Length: 275
Image (cartoon, rainbow, N blue to C red; front, side, top):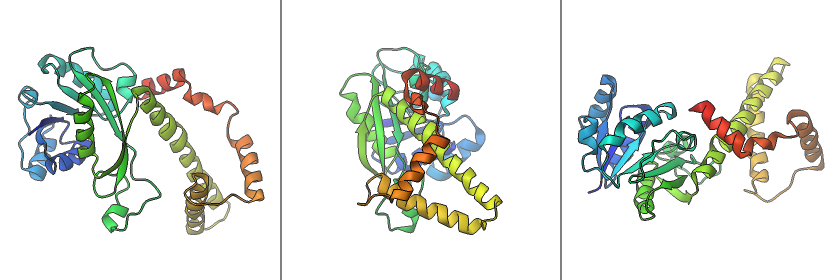
């Protein structure tokens, strides 16, 4: 069986991934530095956490379930004890894109990230409908990048990615640069910002006298149908009045050059800020 060493196993992300690895064909070797985290791993999986040297010995894959700000430092400490050909899996493009991974040409860097369960889905099970992050019950898509290493390593890296993010529908292959465009560019700098602005707008409507429950119900319901039309989930077009409001809203809310956020130098600056 393929051995996977999971670093940060007792953290929030590590516990998510550990549950799925424990249910897969892979043999998991957990690594965790905090006593509370080691106890969580023991209670959840019946496994004792291992020292780093023991965990990576003979492990084909090493997964770094650690914060973006720690990825580079953890990878640097691991480098001397990794066997040639080891696949190191990183869960976000930020640290790799920012150049925080140490150079060693005889190991593989594989980057993977979840798309999270889509807004439009066919989930009917209550547990799946409540799984907004993914990796528990709701189906989701994922993106993967073989940053360096032999092409044949992509298949094993993708299999591990499908296991840790399960249940998975589509698995997309992209580059690390493209993944950085997706996050933080598309998902955080743009999407999260606009969603936060919508929440602020809702609060402004409430401050001007609209009942809170009415404002929230009205906004979330309109987000549903407006998104369905915008992303062609359903056939239809906006009314003339709505289109006029969109033109006015863009001119009022967005800066004319806002798409510069996707320029390579802007993406690079963004990943540096968060790592």
